[in-house]
Image (tube, rainbow, N blue to C red):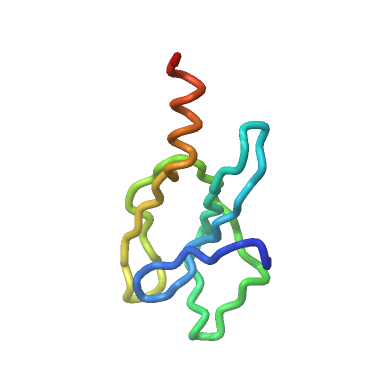
Length: 92
């Protein structure tokens, strides 16, 4: 998991991981969202995670389901990805 960056809520619980993926148009950032957040402070383990979705565009209000947390976070499509999409669909 060295090429993956943890994506956390404000309280530090891991909601998923971000991965840079090569495509024919260059690199994009992809969020691999976990079914349940992981609390690493309470002996949580990154070994057996269940990825519920792989997201390459924007998704709103991902809610941390660690007990008594409830923090929300939004995943936004990156600027590089927006520019690539624009270049594909807008004639210059």
